[in-house]
Length: 181
Image (tube, rainbow, N blue to C red; front, top):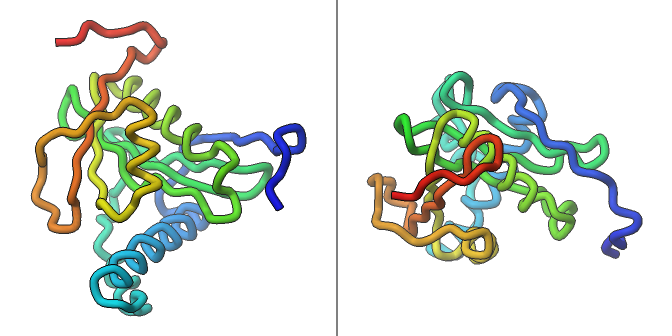
């Protein structure tokens, strides 16, 4: 049963180390979910534990670590319920990575809060725009990005799993709009 708005716990979002236990647990759940969905769609099966371990091992040790990146953890009450990463691609462009909310916490505003926090973090890092890639089967993510003002752009990297690319112009770190080129 879903919580009523009056009974919802508050979300708190803060940057945390990429290698913290909560971060790794969330990233493992994220990777497991997207891998399972991919393999179910393309091969009619779930990902194996070995495939999950191999995918997680592919994350660089400095993935989503300051000064050019960070990992945001969203806590629902005291529970780590979601995450989102932001990293600078260049001096004007940030990239959103691994936006994820655990299944029991979906529908409670965590994804929108994480996305707003990621956009603000990117602006504080000096980015004027934020980009992301995703897959077409991740329909919930597609709907969220479109609802939040992201527009489809041309492919900006060669990851074979990325199928669709988005970008959004950012407001300044203090909420004041930037001039749009």
